[in-house]
Each structure stands twice: as C-alpha cells, then as structure tokens.
Amino acid sequence: MVVNNLESQSPFTTADGSVIRSILDSTNAPVAKQSLAEATLPPGGATERHYHKVSEEFYFILSGTGKMEIDGEVQDVSVGDGILIPPGAWHQITAATDELRLLCCCAPPYEHSDTYFS
Image (cartoon, rainbow, N blue to C red):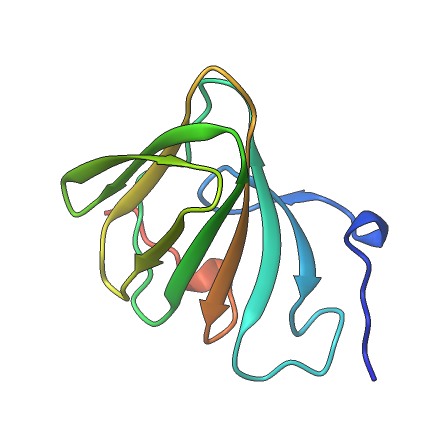
C-alpha cells in the first residue's frame, strides 16, 4: 500500500510556472499510468500558456477563483469545478484576486518533457 501525505511533499516549479506538490507520481510511488499533484498560483498569477502532446489533464479547483483558457475559449472557474484538458489543447489558468489551489491529474504521468510552448 502506498499512502503519501500532501504536507510531506516538497514543492517545485513546473515548466509552465506553477508551483506544485506531487501527491502520487513515478518519483514517489510505483505509478505507471497517471499522476496527481496539487498546484497553487498566487493572486493574479498564471501558468504560461502551453500544451501537452501526450498527457490528458484534469484540473479540480480546491480554493480560489480564476479564468481557464483552453484553445481560445475562456471560462470563469471556482471551487468544485472539474476541467478537462485534452492532449494537444493549448491552455492557461489564471488566478483572480485570491490564491488559486487545484488538483492536477495527468495520464500518462506529468513530465516536463511533454510541456510545449510554441
């Protein structure tokens, strides 16, 4: 059995500029097909607009509000929203006036090498 506590995970900055703490991925568990992390953005902060060639992503908003842009479509997001980001879709999330905290699930697992900016 593998149980990882969020508070015991060290934060790091991803290629898109968000600060994440990996909850379960290949660096801390025998994970093969997905990854789960918590991401935070400061008030007014945003990820760099990017896409993943391989990974499908889910975002789940835990606290705060913001704007989610996927392939040019923009929508307000808030606590309880689940967001599907298909492989190949350009995307960016921006925090509003409060800190934005979300869960990110990637399948296959997140890797810096699958993040593209142009």
